[in-house]
Length: 280
Image (cartoon, rainbow, N blue to C red):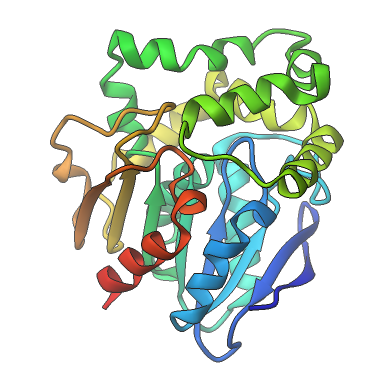
């Protein structure tokens, strides 16, 4: 399936995206995470398109060629997504799929404007309040990079030696995944053009605006929502607590065997099929 490079003029600037599939099919918006961008997930996007979806996958704020200027608080990131939905699909609720940071934004979009979302899927990211409520020592060890990214000069550290730290995170988070060299080179180009903006998502976690986000997220999510998590995720452990009280609508949590943090890139057909089966 072919994807075209499109742009959307939004309040924060011109956002770039990949778009493909039948324009009359279910509009599906796919949000990438860190440290990633839409082209690495193109096989997954194509599988969604083959299952009756019109797909748009934007480069999020902070990732070139979309605007790399801040702020990077959750309300601003959510505002970008809602503005894109209003621009792209003003008369029809969308299916929203988010991975990692895209997943965090997905939860916030669902509580902020549930009428704009038909259903949602999060990949490799539990409900943010659930994630914060289970700070096991092993998870804290896996989250060491969050502390590093608070430091001045962390953008230089992340970019050094041709993004060696970023490549290390990919290997650690999805041990069974090896990116095609051409795909990896394209990702490197995006990240080098974007640094240090992608790291500022993590710095936003310690800003006062997060209090408002936490208050919003304390509301039960009414949007039908599927959570998918890889059993071999080296970044975030699959959740161990029962948080069904955070979901007031149809909800399902599935731990997918033999895949890691980038589960939709490791197994694009299988993950798209799980989403399609749940949606039906």
